[in-house]
Length: 286
Image (cartoon, rainbow, N blue to C red; front, top):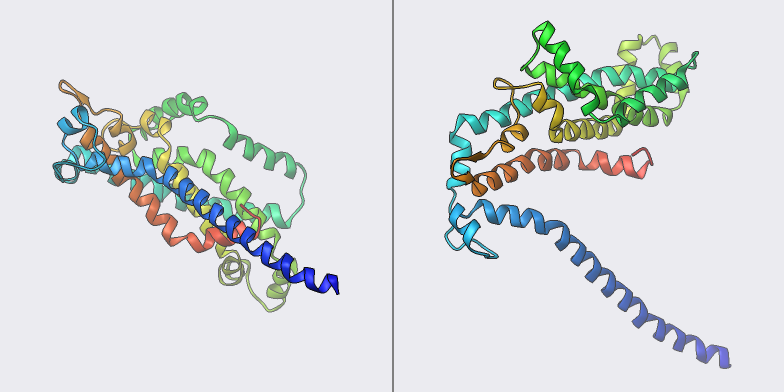
């Protein structure tokens, strides 16, 4: 009788505790999101101010709202050409990296050959090495063969660390596909190319999306190689942003506007591949 009467009391006391935990979780998550968004908001805030207001006043929002900084970037070829150059070599690198990584990852996931583990580890060590190690060899090589200051030069240089990453991600997804699917397709008369494109690639679409996302992002934010291997014709926006100081000092408003516009391509890529990234984390492959 006493147990029956005590049970409802325990339930009523546990409900306020659960509500308190939920409230605390909401508060902590809100503070965390505000902490993450604060630099982005401040960058956007600076991009809408004049240079005088940025340097002389501390304001939480623009007193004199201006879009002149964005107009400067969108009308000055020295600025907008940097975005075009960056997008060109980043897209080229993503396509090349996936084209090379897909058959390589398939070989590692389906076959066993002498030195396969050592070769796979060597690929990953290229990803671990800092880009500064390879800057000088790439500079001398591209200068000798006439590829210096071209988009393909930067795209191929970024393959050094994006191809191993793509192989590592795709190999994990391919291991999750049963080998019986390959054998069934061969019995049905599929050639390897037709089977790989029509059957196998749709099964690992999430892995391809995740690999493309990381290849795009790592190539987009890389600075050292892209700055070393270009001068004028293929100079990326990241290199242009480091050369904003003039006789009057640094133009903080224009630099902030350039930073905001630099975030936009990455945000768009995240939006379009968000489902693939979520599946990648859910499957434990990322």
